[in-house]
Length: 632
Image (cartoon, rainbow, N blue to C red; front, side, top):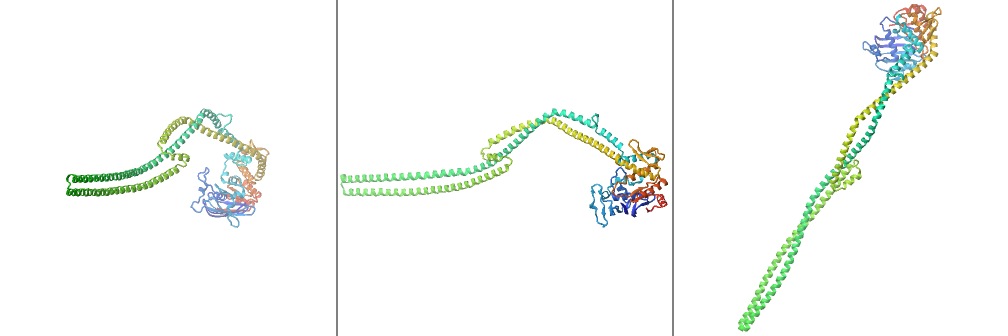
């Protein structure tokens, strides 16, 4: 891979910069504080993005490189992969993901994996090198070269770490020591007594013993709870039935009240019928009496008249014939008899006329009675009709209201029970019985609640113990899993370490030996790694010396050599070698050797040297090595 062009719109102190890089060696020259480190960070930011996390620093990279003048925080990088494919990446640093274009300027950003945290991983997909690996091998930043003699032991440790583990900041022995210490302090073992896992185990045993004494109360609680629920359910059902009875009672009382109103009409009808009966009876009695009286009177008058007339006539005739014997008297007697008869007849006639008058009067009375009877009969019919209508209305309303009541309680009370209640006529007894049952059940429920209240503190203690037990079990499993994980990590580290020693370390040391021999002009030829002593270097006289006893300059050479060796096979691409002020503390001889070595051994790699001096330029010119220079 080779970087072709850089376009910086705004990034830190850099504004409107366009930089063209070439194959081979490129020198980025600038005085101190001219923006060399900013340019390197721009390159890293273009391919990996800028983090907004401080990661232990005073400010984050994002905050640090935000344009000072508030301009557009963006830029573009063009590069070519080893297979010849060209790409352009435009990144607005205010956004997480860049725009990636191929040679045809097609946006292919979606062709790469997207990480929710870091964004588009296009550069890793293309090179298989992440930012951390890039910085620890082929990119040497300025801070790593500023070592004084007192810091050489730290650099030697980095060398040992890199040879033994593949990472300059990872020491196998220190990792194993830390893991063992962490395992002991954070977890514990069967032989310890006051470590987390020992404390948890002991408390679990104590809780188990306490729980055994309280479990009986839980069984009792279940019984009490079932009884309580049963009573509550029974009371609820009884209260529902009681409510139904009370509502039905109201409906029945309303119906009864309406029926009582009807009874007034019924009583009136009875009274009218009685009057009609009395009038009919009276009328019949009067007719019979008058008929008998008239017959008797007629018979008596006739008999009396005939007898009287006969007596008078006889007496007159006897007197006239026997005593007087006078024709005149006889005639007078006859006349008197006739007159008497006429008088009697007239009297009889008058009486007859009186009878006719009485009869007419009686007929008038009879007619009045008939009219009164008819009026009463009509009133009775009207009242009966009204009573029937009202009664039908009452029964209809009663049926509708009871049906509503039935529908209201369906689902609350069993239908069979509802229908049985609705058929009842007398409800007082049932209401009283239900009220008594509810009262008794509420007393039982209160007693049950008291029993429950008495065992609640014990159950709360049991619940608290079980909760604590559950938490401790979880803690125990976490400790157990953590212990297993640490053991597994230790096993994997040991496996990796063995593989490293067997396969990687020899290759590292071989490459390192070749590199150090060339850049030291044959002074140091052989570098080995010992688990106990660390890195060992063969001196010109054939003796072996610990790396920590070498000069700072030699240690710097070793460290750079090892990084270059480590970066040889880390990627599918021949990535650029970027060195930021790496040779600031090297003498001219060492610098000349490393420049010659870089030119000879890495002809297929792009090399970018950041420097604030003209030494690199002068020595490359002296050696006749072509280079591209960029002045900031």
